[in-house]
Length: 309
Length: 245
Image 1 (cartoon, helix red, strand yellow):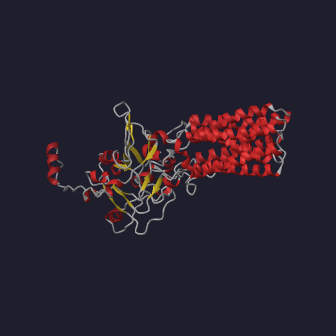
Image 2 (cartoon, chains in turn blue, green; image 1 turned 30 degrees about the vertical axis):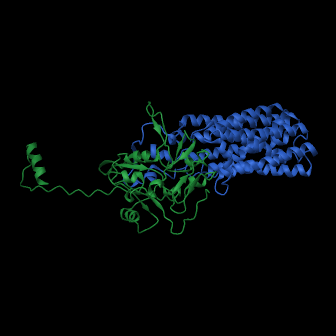
Image 3 (tube, chains in turn yellow, red; image 1 turned 90 degrees about the vertical axis):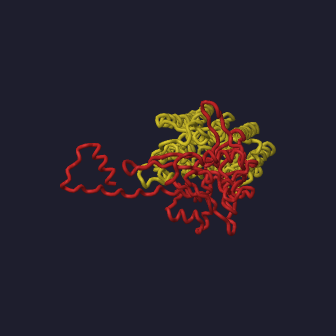
């Protein structure tokens, strides 16, 4: 699948934003993040800015961005529509949570209630994002039970790294750093198991099942239907060399998980705030590579007709 | 509404039956489809760089050619690919706006271009590559089963079939109601062992493909009588072969 910059930016930025809102909504009322109003403003604004930037960037790949509002209408059948509904539903609780924090402080029941609602709608949105991909039977690398948990864990991890960095700057990021370590280890292990699974899986659809001509033996494309590219090949025919995929996987694991986890652990051990800030940049770069690979390594059944596999 | 409607009472399952035995790979179906539809329901079907080095465009029919098997049993098969108007079309259910829909009365899968936001998710959901994006208009386009021909009362009745069917010079494409077991197309499918493409994808396509026929077993070469000497001259040997047929 074509790794479109707009969708890669959308899923990573909004994932981190929803992750940050999730931890803010749960940890701040529990007294596990700085109680400062300034921290609340900066952290909530950063979370909402990442989410909004992501949503706006996702509209850039639409043919008609001005009609994007129509996308909330088909929530009965479409995960993309449900994602839109959940994304819109997350704004009011997040805004009210930030207002209550400013007005009454983070530990009051109203703040806690809106915080919990923020955490719920944030994860519901990420769940829908994961389901958009996981529900496509045409793309075997996405139609995998690990995809939705991975989207959730990566959002929780990147949000926790952000919360740890910001909390650390205000002098109370240790709990968030602990959650970042835990979710980071879980996400890294699941990602490795995901890569093993997609490498070993036998595709259910083949050129023989696509053409129904397997009864005569192996099927090979002889003449293509057209000499030039077309939309299908541009959008769904993207291919990445195995060699590059292996290198990028190592780079993604190193930048997205090893480096941030080592930095966070050293920050906790030395009681320093700076390593968590560096971890944000490493994790951000690593997750962009991870998301690029998520698209680049995905193969669509339509390419069976063109290339045979 | 992008939920799949229950078929209307007495509803039809209109679709195509494509005979891979008689298709000669001439691409006339693709060309006539392009010609009709560029001024039809989904019009226009744009071309990009039409007179340049890399011409391409939106087509609803693509004709592939494959080799299947090897040696004496191998064969070349021309394979037209277009929308299969599935009974359970994932391209419809993923649509976030309601632009994509399946008609309850005849099962035709259509796009309402006025509602389409061009998110392209339907083209990701279709296993068969039936949907092509119109980059000029910013909306998705697809085969309409020539809905503007099959119900068109201004056309003579014999022409009320999809453009690809009407133009096929070898009569390799058939149109009809595959939901009615007594229809001509259903009988054809039953008699020739018609099959669905990628059934494992679970879309329940309506269109059927008829496999190339088995070759008749060639007759065993006639035994030469023991007392006949082999013919030495190549010319006479050829004449012997021709006359012995």
